Length: 581
Image: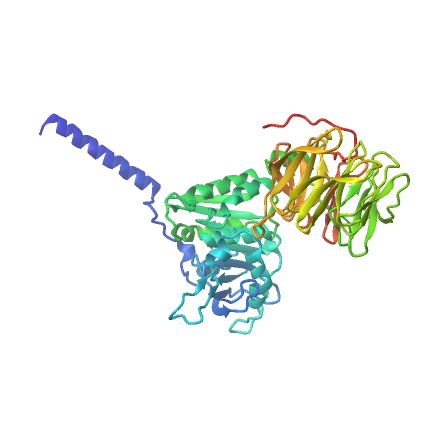
């Protein structure tokens, strides 16, 4: 045989040997995952009961029918509410067997499993028409619909059932006692339920998660980085052979999610493999995932610290919201005076209230001293009080539906939501009649002035924009621009932005249903913080040092001490530092 051929054969043999060593060293050929002993029936382990039911009475997903199974471990005693595992797409990961084994060894607490299929709306005549399949609608979409379905409908239904030996099923209502899991679209459904209601679901198992653009799931990494960390512990799995189709690359999306969660300080663990879009790998690792997710229970899941710089610059570690008062129907026109006392109005009683520096709330009568009461003829002959007795102490408006700011020059700007679809921005000059300085916005709402008093900001709640105007020497506006881009809830086509305020560094704080969106000077949302009840309609800085952020939130008023100080519209100009572009 020629020497050249000998060399070729030798090289080929070496390559084969190297490949063999690599495969043997990994102990794994592609997507060849096998469950271990924890996923197989073991001798002398008490076996739980699995019961099947059908649910067809949903109000949140009307007309749908679905099957669900309840697993009840042998060790369960109804005297104490059990921990919960919820899984989408029915029974996955050989869960009943795994739970039997791990519960018997006290490696996880006593857990009742609830395994649910997605809803189907049956066609009137199945021979002529197709059913409507709700899986993508229920699982892939962002928002709280699926969490509400579980909490308001399915889990209460589960607790009406009994085991074959008569044990009533009682489930813990504590999110720390609940885990939710899913595969593919079921995984993003599990994460969304925890994201929307971390008080109800604190532990998440996600395999081959669909964090791509089917119904907006690709937005999660950005939102995770902007929101304050939530009480969620998550275990993730995916494989390098996962889907790469029109909606996105599952493999890359899962890694992007994991990096966002790590950046934001979450308790996150992950196992990456080479598998395809299936449950093989997840089933093999499920026992380990359960052990990790339930480690140190009943201790609470930890709330981490985000690397988000805006959160670091504005929020004080350990300083949370304080309830100031409750029992109102608050509006979007909170105001502050020169002493740092805060004013807000109550729609129900049509009265104004003052929050004193000691935190106590007292009635407030907006009576002009040396100011003026100006009638706005464009809207129900409403009167608005402009109090100029003490510079920097404008009284809150008598009309509860207007948003207004008063500049150091005495010019007052306010937004009119619209009469017959014509939304306006008005200017009231000292001792003169009001004039319209802009029109054409769909629904003008919140309003604020930059710390240097050169720019006016107006939110259009029917869009995701906050407009920026340059204020001229005579108070009129020019150079209008759609400047601040806001996030919107998945269930809404607009931001529904309400009250706004600014700090002395030039950040804009916007009250929206998604929370308080904190924007930098160049128009980007950099952080989002939420109030305890998830609502917010107006914002203002107040307190003795103007470092207390006040938020009217439905029937409650909250405040939170921040690292930064507010810049009221009436205060003297402050020039912020040049922003990073």
